[in-house]
Image (tube, rainbow, N blue to C red):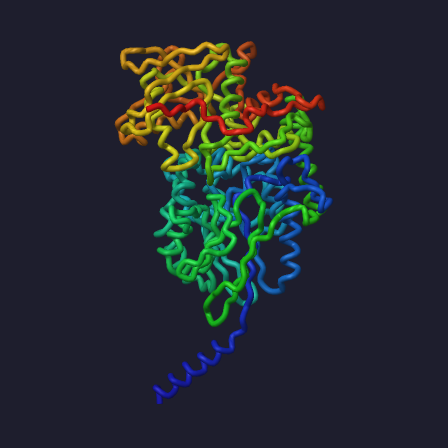
Length: 599
């Protein structure tokens, strides 16, 4: 009798499952928005209220129009998520600690869940918490996820962030119940993202795969029907052109995740990458696309019905309330940041009829933009500091945008060099200067010649030197000679003798110069470099290396990378006599003169 009852129970349960209604879930997603509230580029051409009259991409008003249209047109479950790095990239982010504007704007646009990426920590965890608190003080914000953060019990630098966890403002996991389904979310900050977030300390981050397995178990125990991971870890192409990277590995290694919404790598995935039945999706960068993933849930399983990237372009009329909110914030940026510099938001500062690019995902070594920025730093430091510098230097990883044909404004220039902050009220990394011997300079350049092989962001551009090298020689033995090129046309050779104590100065942003400190690691301990000040004393605190750009004023007047570039292009000739400087055509082709191959 018991066996018969058991059989009848399973028969009835099977009939119930087979009759379950199919449910559609639409996931709208973005990643790596980087505060690109206005479309680009150039920003002055962005007209979100008027479709069909410009070629800009992106813009929050247009994104809002897509999100709202999709929610209206999709009865049932529609969710909007962002996979991190929503901040850092434009002059707007510089106002966030004071205004807490962007998170409130994203809530207004229709975002349900936003995860924190590495760039949310660019000002340190205390200021990350400050931005969130500033947002909360003025309105509603989306649910915030930062799942694999490990807070320090000993250090106080993350105490304010810990309070946000305690008050359930920042979450480890988030569960939505819609239309009878439980949908569970968690987030990850990946290995590479952690490596490029040194200011996140004392916060550390649990390893992706074991932590993801733990979260899946928890969410399943909570009764979730669907588990979605917002992973700020990234994907990339391998040597065969196949998708690889941290989020692909995650999909392979962790069972129970139904969707991975990826970020960090700025990769445009036009079709979902299906790994063991798990779709991995990513939209690219800067809000140029909105991803639309349509899932079907039936009989306890999830499958992909449709996926597409929706271009955020001038075919879309922006939402008027978002346009108005952004314009108000734009006025604040002018008043607080640009007006003291004698500028307004849409003042033309230069123009060009050719593209200047630095494509980290492509042929970055053939950039024409990187050498121009290095020249700008070299020129700026030598113009404003009595000690000047021998070498100007910039890395691919801190070049965040291109210069496209058209008229540029100060916000366009800032987007190119938008990372970091100093000890003043202006955004951007301050410029710093360190001194090294000729032998140390050679060792630095030997390492930096191959540093791009571990990460393209490590490739550097230089101004003020010429290097002769033999690519066929052994590692650390490739460079034959280094010649310093003076600002007045003079030149002199660099001695590699360990007995020669002549010092040479290198100027770059304060974060970039910390790169010298990891030379030992990159050379497996074979090369040591001791950064020094002008007197030869060791420098361990980078604040001591920040350059004072106006020695007549009390305190240190910081110079910024973006101000160096702004001054440099504004100093160029006005070829067509329209009162707007034209970018020098010598930069219309890649500049490779500082490294010459000689066998």
